[in-house]
Length: 116
Ligand SMILES: [Zn+2]
Image (cartoon, rainbow, N blue to C red; front, side):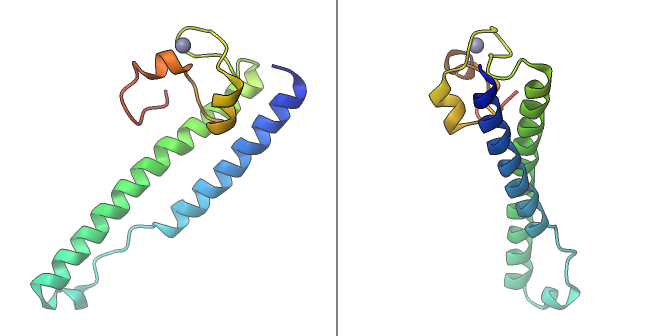
């Protein structure tokens, strides 16, 4: 991978990182509001909203960790190679998914949703 490709990847990763951090600020878990516990329906919808926010936050943290790990690989000079088999990750795949840590073949063996 040449220097200009690394610069493109770094810019994409930093942009993704900013987006994820902004998303994290928007999904701050709200403390239950005692006023909404007046009815069953309101309580249920609040529980639903909390679970949705927790799921979003989990997903967000996994993605953020993947982006940080990719930035660390850029610094270490190992970015763009699969962390499992060491082969080059395709340029098109990296363009679509800058935080990809695995080549397509190894990704198939990683549990869904996992990046590392
Ligand atoms: Zn691989």
